[in-house]
Image 1 (cartoon, rainbow, N blue to C red):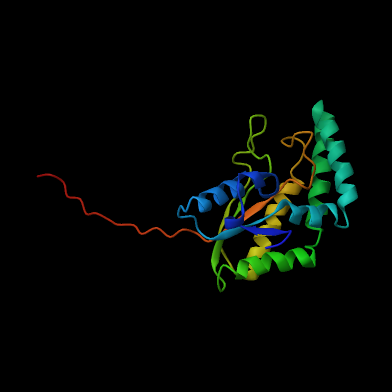
Image 2 (tube, one colour):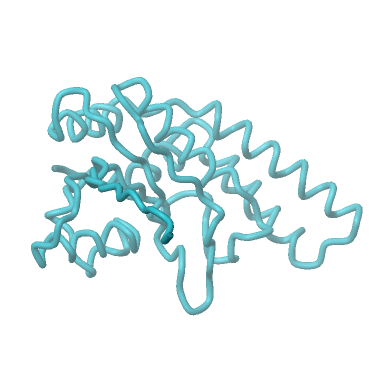
Length: 201
């Protein structure tokens, strides 16, 4: 699908460095012909293009480096400074527009799933969970996303969450961009049966 997105059927474990662990593992399940809902991954290159190459990329990188240094040995006063740095990074991320070519790639992949289909948007961070890092529960999944506007808002919020979180959980080698991917897929509809139970007499 291009440099910014990849279909789940195109991914394998070797792609974890660009699609994140969740995206790469879903690709393996598709390859094994297991019942995985159709979808695609917004690759980490999306976020590199939007954040690193965006109008605030240089300042975000400097602020993130400064925040990491403060967080390593933070006193109460430095804790307040860390909060201020994180707030400023969040403001800059929110002020960063979606690059037109990234938007076009994402919407193209979405429309290939069907006509205004309902999808879920989930994190697939590169190095999100490993022997040395764990971000379990720190990223939201968004469900019942329908239409272009809702999809772009959901993806933007994933970007805001990923890029504006600060040094209190990001390891020193993680930069504010270049590590975040995102899965978009149709939900799997399960048929449920109900049973009527009666108490023994």
